[in-house]
Length: 115
Image (cartoon, rainbow, N blue to C red; front, side):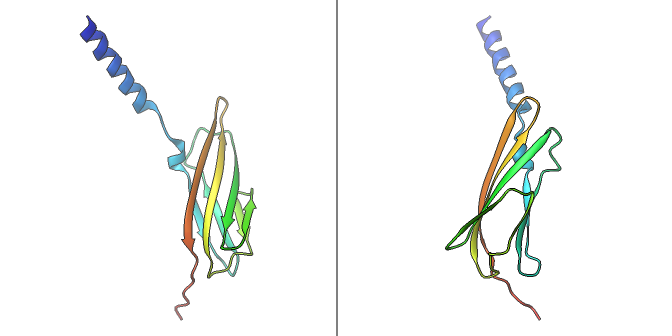
């Protein structure tokens, strides 16, 4: 009897573990630098269960930290030759939960002109 209960408990545990989804794995962002303005855009369209979202961008170069709360943020102070760190805190709101997704990346913005 103990063996059957243990097997059943382990089986239910595995089913529960497989049902958990990490929605943050579906979040990505796009980096663009049209003209001289560095910009970033969050991509959350692949997440079907959120009701609302908010984001806080933080962009750091060697001397300053900049922030923005727009899904597409423009940072005019970032130069194409800057080495920067881009971070975001993305809050996804559902009717029953708030999910926080966070990420940071270091980027070298060196621009090559191939004319």
